[in-house]
Image 1 (tube, rainbow, N blue to C red):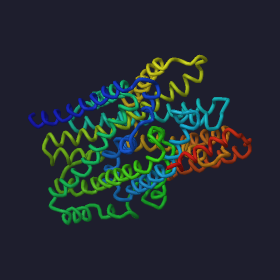
Image 2 (tube, rainbow, N blue to C red):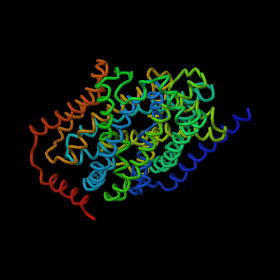
Image 3 (cartoon, helix red, strand yellow):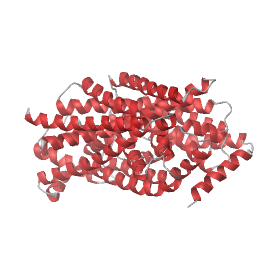
Amino acid sequence: MSDQIFTFAALALYFAGMLLIGWFAFRRTSDHEDYMLGGRNLPPWVAALSAGASDMSGWLVMGLPGAIYVSGLIEAWIAIGLTIGAYLNWLLVAPRLRAYTEVSRNSITVPSFFENRLRDGTRLLRIISGVVILVFFTLYISSGMVAGGVFFESSFQGDYLVGMLLVTGVTLAYTLFGGFLGASLTDVVQGLMMVIALIVVPVAAIVAIGGFAETGDLIAEVAPDHLSLLSGTALTGGTLLAIVSALAWGLGYFGQPHIIVRFMALRSPQEAKSARRIGISWMVLSLGGAVFSGLVGIAFIAQRGIDLANPETVVLLMSQTLLHPFVAGLVLAAVLAAIMSTVSSQLIVSSSALVEDIYRVFRKTPPSSKTLVLLGRIGVLGVTVVAAVLAVTPNDTILGLVSFAWAGFGAAFGPIILLSLFWRRLTNWGALAGMVVGAATVFLWKPLNTGLYELLPAFVFALIAAVVVSLLTYRANAEIDEEFAEAGAMVAAK
């Protein structure tokens, strides 16, 4: 019982810290743009750590180590693909999106940017974008809530539903009042906690096993195929198809609204460079730690003769076994951090889709800024309730839920983001065609069970549809051309 007191004290300290940051952000949120985009005033280090933490979610500390534990380094191709994708996203998309969203009528959401950039008078592009965000983010947020429930179930032998509701309640509280700034600042703390935990736990396990040599020998004895990047038994059979599918995860970055909105919130396009260096450094350490944890877990579990019922809890089990209860509690808090940082960011974007991209389209008279902030908070609450209902009876793994939502956003928005930033001939009808084809392909491809991650074909089909339809419907527009050039000049400015 005394051990649990230390653990609960660490968790209580973490929860209190998150709520305090939410209150701090609440005091500094005065209007709708503050609530949705932090007033475009994020320093590079906040944007970088916030983007990373909101990106990774519970799969970083639970899903990925679990996949490595079960299938070996063949699953590390996901980490490689993500790192490449994130780097290209910071390099190509971040500076130009920051500039273009300001130039194009100060767009504060991804759907509003599409509408303004392409001068979509039908408003269909904004509405359909908002609907896509709501559908896939509700699933994505639900995966975070599932991770929270699994976390409490495995860590404290507690009730799944109680744990899920507790994590949801605290995340809802600081997001509801702190808005975008609250989510971003909590992400910084949570990102640091995640990377520290993913370094401390495998190192402690290696020491307990007897050193690097002993750990390597045990892995080679228990699961020799797990040490190769080119062989193993993954969900897709460990073939070249599995590697291509894993690398394809990197394509998803270009279309993730909760990540690219951090680019829009930077103080200037020029600060994307330093943010990229910080963000990718954090990512390499975090993903490396997660992969390392899964491998070390194989040796640790084998040496101790432990029956691991759920591979996705391997990091939790090692931390509770090896570390002082208070330190283990902080590691458990880091798992919660991974979950909550993503959920909070996604709630803000979902709320913006409801208020900024759907409600305001149908509202003839513009509402006041205070009304918009209130509606934003109501939107956060509404999406939370729907996602929580879905999470009560989960029917997939954490990684499975995340992969489907990731594919949905990557295919629906990724090609359109890239084309809108770098191809002036993109039209509103081309963007609509690409978005619908991308989202539909994700839904239709997954049940086929081809072994190829649905994001790859969906991304390619969406790109082709957007280009073909744009070429058929393009009409020169001097205003669009002027904005395109202005955004480029803003990026190039010193």
